[in-house]
Length: 402
Image (cartoon, rainbow, N blue to C red; front, side, top):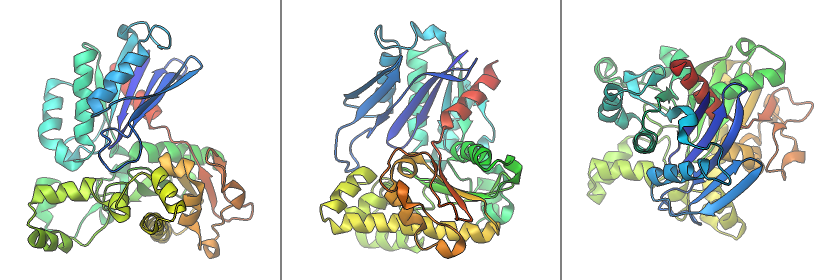
């Protein structure tokens, strides 16, 4: 059976076509810089890899629907396609960041499920869920009759104890409205936990670790005995680290203060917090880490400051989760930033040598490195692991359509 995995991020769409008989990836790629309206330097593009060929093409990807149509065009292309027709695709698996209290486990898409997701779940991930919904609708348009499955990033975080997921807010908000910490990037943290255990030569239930998923959206998760016990994202993916366009942790009183002074309504404010804040706001030019490094190296002080803020926030969460866990076996780095920006990773752990965390400078210039990045005498191992949310999604889709 062949499963098409669609993983819509806030400004990207990753895809893989996987033959589940042997878990072979038949085709993979990504659409990046979708929308092109967040101050990014460069044009939207698609990268596609199949049958030993790799193609990159700049395209006007105004939204995720346009990006998905580009993916389908490449998958079925006579020369570079991975399937002759879409009939060869048995199911489509969608990554969903957070559906709130309405979905806790993976589910087949039915009219009732789609309506519940559209009418109730969107506010729980306002930057991501609309993109996922666009992908689902595009699949209905172009791949009629093929089962679709929603797989949720929040499932891995269901093991958090109540002291980690509860907020100091009126309790009826939790009971009646589902206000609590949900987290995100659960599939990535789950996959990396399994891979880290292999690298350590341990069973997952024997591992204490801190997983750092760093990308346009970023989160850090504390894992104890293979299970999530805390995570940086909260009720929505807005909480936590400073991200590409999201503010991360702030004093909530700032919201009313600025709304009054600037004459903003709540929708304008939420748009700013989700789409016009973070690294984009700090630099004043871009939220893309690649462009920020170029700007910093050319002498842009605000770009340098934005990168410093990012590294500082990551380091602060690492320290907090070390306290929560008591003992850690390893720290992992994954995601677009974690996997391809060694100098940023190094900055995130600089100064932690007294805690037995030592970065190996031999890897500072290798932006495609995967594996151990700590020194031999580092008490806490550090790994760069190429995350694979897609295989987690594909397995869940297969389980539900078999």
